Amino acid sequence: MSAAADTEPTARMIPLPSRGGAMAALEFGPTDRPVDIVFSHANGFNGRTYRTILGPLASGLRILALDLRGHGATTLPTVIEGRQGWLEFRDDLLALLAAACEAPVVLSGHSMGGTSSLLAAAAEPERVRSLALFDPVIMPVEAQAFAADPDSPLLAGAMRRRAIFPSKQAAFEAYLGRGGFKTWSEAQLADYVEAGFRETAAGEVTLTCAPAWEASNFRTHNYDAWAAFRDSRCPIRVLRAAEGSTFRIEGRENDLGDDGRIQVQTIPNTTHFLPMERPELVRSLLASCAARSS
Image 1 (cartoon, rainbow, N blue to C red):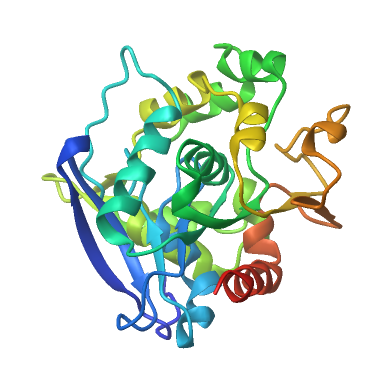
Image 2 (image 1 turned 90 degrees about the vertical axis):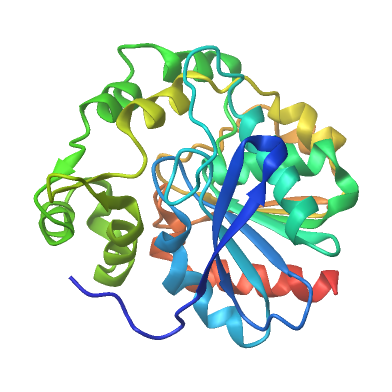
C-alpha cells in the first residue's frame, strides 16, 4: 500500500473548547494567506481521503480538509444516545470557521460533508462566500426515514462493517477493487486507509470511525435542507451523481429558485463517489468558486 508522495499537507489539531475537543485538519497551500476553502468529507471517511483531489490546488489556494466529529483524528466527543443529528456537524463547522478562518471562505464537501456545509452556510451566512457541494445528502422526509430504518441497507451495511484488520495493508487489500471502492484509484484508497484506521494495543488496526457512529449518522439526519437553501445567501454550485445520487430534488426543482444563485449539474457516468471518479471537475469547481469569491 502506498499513496502518492506529492502534495503532502500539514496535519493540524484545532482546539474547539466550546465543542468539547479538537478538530483534526489537513492544511494545503500557503499559510501566509487567509483560508480559501474548508472541505468536509462523507460519512465514514476522513479528510485525507481527498488528498490527491485537493492537493493540486495547493499552489495557489489555502485549504483545510477536516476530519468531522467521530472520524479520523478528531477528538470531539461521540455520544450516540440522544444525538441531535447532523446539526452537530453544522455547529462544529461554525466553531471551526470562527477559530481558524480570518475571513469568509468557500465551504465545500462531499455527501454528508456537503449537507453539513449547507447547514452551516444557512445558520451563519456571513462566514461563507460560496458553497461547492458534491452529491450532498438532500432527501425527502420519507427517504430520510427509510435511511434510519433498522432494515435499510445503508444502516445494516454500516453495522456489519468489519472494524478490525491485522494491518493497514490487510485493510487496503481487502477493499481494493471491491464494493464502493471499485471506482477509486489506489492512491485514494491508500489515503482513506491511512487516516481511517489506527493501531490497537493488540497490534492490529481498527476503524477511526466506529461502525456504530457511522450507522448513527444514517439514523439521525434531523435537518431541513430546503430551509437551509432558502436561508443561505451565497452562490451555490452542486455537482450531482448520475447514478444512485443522494441529491434527491425530483419534483422540487422550483424550490431552488430561478435567479441562478443555486446551480445544479448532473455529471454523466458517475456514482455517489463522484469526487473520486472525476477529481478534475472537483478541482475546477473549487478553483472557480475561490476565484469568484476573491
